[in-house]
Image (cartoon, rainbow, N blue to C red; front, side, top):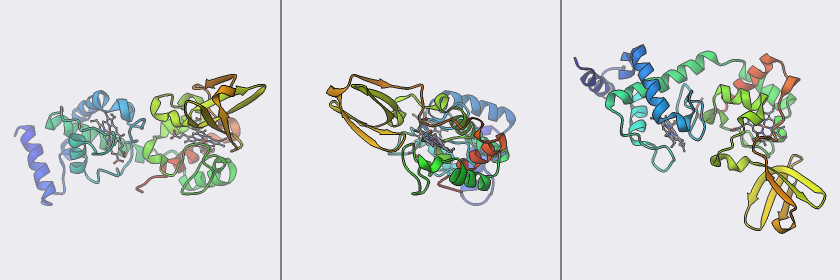
Length: 260
Ligand code: HEC
Ligand code: HEC
């Protein structure tokens, strides 16, 4: 039977509830490889090469918010998510679309298998030992000097999170979409203020420094204004935690999701 017809048949039976099977179950290793290629061309620029997130969501999750099953994921790839930056990718054939669906699902499976540490131990490290709530909010608790982490597991993958802890400068996004969390250093007379740019217009700039104080500075008083792309306010963990404690912390962050 030609594959296109097989997929259509399976999709139809599955959506009618007659068959608890989806075309994804029929996919071979070669299909996954083809799905990976399609992903690299059409999806990776927003979702990252490994699907770990960037401008688009982290897709390496066992459950996706907008795609409860394979058919929903297929429809999402075809039509996008209206009202968001997620575009419909209609240039794909039906077969290519199922292959990319299978590839995205495989990312979620892999992630489940390799969750590196213990999220409960990670929570204790986060809350009690590592000083993270001084700069981050999780479900309403903490201070918002850095980005809110309440659903960080939706946006980011394991590799990205580990890097943000160990080498914050390397992972600090320098693209426009993240300009929210730009580190700036300004000089006014002999005073130097360094911090997160909270707001900026033609006449003034507001900066929150690492102690949490807000500085509002008129631009005509400035001796210099530097955007420090390669420098992060996020302190690197360095040797403060053992490798397995870092794994626990990463697992805790991965567990901060909209869906369990
Ligand atoms: C132009 C950037 C862009 C491209 C290209 C793109 N996406 Fe997205 N995608 C997004 C954004 C942004 C979101 C998050 C939408 C939101 O929640 O506001 C998203 C969301 C998703 C979601 C939903 C995640 C969830 O939590 O349920 C899936 C699945 C997805 N994209 C898959 C894909 C696939 C597969 C491709 C390639 C065929 C692709 N995307 C191409 C930007 C993109
Ligand atoms: C002194 C303030 C400060 C402390 C303490 C701090 N962070 Fe951050 N963090 C930031 C800032 C600011 C950013 C934004 C990007 C940057 O500057 O690198 C950030 C970024 C991050 C990101 C990347 C988020 C994203 O979506 O890209 C993660 C994850 C993170 N921090 C986790 C932690 C954890 C876990 C701890 C505790 C071990 C911690 N942070 C402690 C300030 C801090």
